[in-house]
Length: 215
Ligand code: AMP
Image (tube, rainbow, N blue to C red; front, side):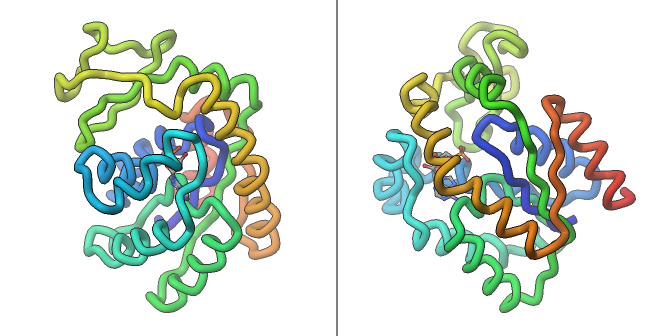
């Protein structure tokens, strides 16, 4: 499947993408994960992106399009892909349309995962992430803590609170989302293939997508 997953930070895009990859071998492409990997590795991209990310601001569109142009041409995308956290601005959405046309790729669906702001705020404040860039497993101190406090169940690396998941940064990220990313709903509604799914549970969101795509 070839999908765009829209939704605020903390709406569950990453969890839904991981569940969907298990269905047909599509790959999850998270620009946030790619950028965090670059920051940890200390690459030029990481150095340029780090300040924006820590403040909860968006990284400039040109940097993101450079990443995506390369990523979408990697062979593992042939089976399908789930775009998680991209596009995030109207210029990114427009550039993506050009890129997909150039690569002769048709999207199956654009899904907006709609979750109330108070649920999202609470989820992000209690979220913890494995700091290993190859893993980046997600935990929650309330609903899904690691078995051993502060240690990733999957790879044994430290589990941390991300710099952009303090209350202040989260408030800012949600404001940035409302200003820059929420307008994508109107953009894709006009384009067709758009589905709004209200869902606090990722399983319900996945079931709705499967039904729509007859998977
Ligand atoms: P995420 O994990 O998707 O919430 O992304 C974490 C941070 O990476 C965001 O707050 C932005 O600073 C940056 N980022 C990720 N994806 C994008 C994007 N498509 N456009 C601009 N910045 C992005």
